[in-house]
Length: 309
Image (cartoon, rainbow, N blue to C red):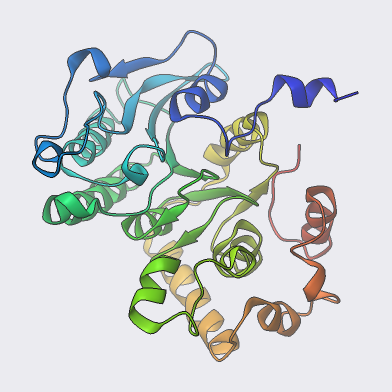
């Protein structure tokens, strides 16, 4: 018999952006801004004979999580790879700016939840997409400077690649599942420029070893590891908004120091099992094969932050 908690909690990876929002927030509290009925769509896709979406693949709005107000942004990875473009980027930036403007007022929120599911910039709107990423980073840092944490949740089909990888690195706290992937350069891009002998994008085991959730949390590129169901992401989001560090020069200096040490320690490694071995894991080759409970136990043994259900 399937356990009741699994029946009640769907897979984050397989859920749509709207279903993820429904599972994250308190029931009946979500209020969407510029929803599908407004039909604010990309003006560019028709030029390429591509169908637009009424929400341009991004959902923004407000709701409550455990009774506290939050702003939420969710990318739909199944529309154009969840990419940053003119309209989708404007919706993200507009909400982030509104959050900053309302900080400290009765209309303020306790956190921003950023549900990343993106391949990066939309190639058909490349210039607008690049601007959207840069403006998102600026607006996100403005939210953090106003004292409001931004929690990234990564576990969707598209991962968080390209500009999405950069945005993820700017968040206060990153929650990831085994299915999540984070990288600035996607596997297909590396293969196109350097060849399959450098990085075979069809080798799923390789892709997940290099960019997947387990590697990211072991190396500090993500702060919390969760099982891949919506309920686990909800619990982690509620905890993470209270665990985010202050946005200070000391925090930034500590992060820079950590990155420099990581490069010094592992910069010459060719694959992640080498990194895990050098980091002291007793059986690094087993990491991709163990189940979530065993991996969470491994994190606990090494005193790495994680969010177990």
